[in-house]
Image 1 (cartoon, rainbow, N blue to C red):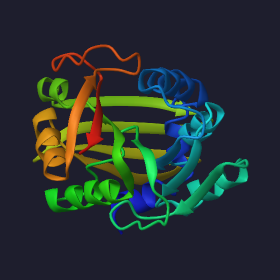
Image 2 (cartoon, helix red, strand yellow):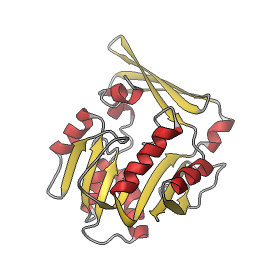
Image 3 (cartoon, one colour):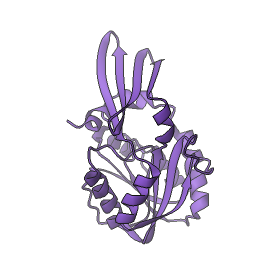
Image 4 (cartoon, helix red, strand yellow):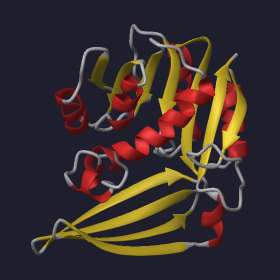
Length: 241
């Protein structure tokens, strides 16, 4: 089983990332919504939507939203909170095929680079391009990998709802790997997150090959300039040619 199939369906995933909440989504997407000047009824795909926090925010901002994710557990949660103008489906980002076409595709919170090859990354971008209208926009939000090159190993420990989380993040080959040990009532569970070490130049190359042109790159959700050595995010706005 691929790492994301087990980890994203785990009850511990939303616990560990509970700080990534509706309030954060509201700030980030309100800024992006204003910057992109999205009119009411804009057709949006939330690719790798998780439990739907970004989808719900986009819906409140007036967009018509479809959210897809590989995790059936996450999609079930998103569906339980959905309203008219929202739809959620279980799909693999590499192979999804919808009848809808979209004005904007959002791929947020480092929901890319899960795989072992550029070919699979390219397949994702090709699927995105296929589902975008001409001149459609891709918003791709990835971690900024540059500062990690100077901090090869990072450890954290925290207790959330009486569950002890110990994480270790390091660079292994061409990937950023986070090992997650979860101790719940004396039972330890092991999970892994693994994303490719993708730099802006890599994204530029892949996006160009799939018919996109990068128009803007921001370094955080406040849409400040991207600074390779210090920005927490690499937030790309690209347009389908």
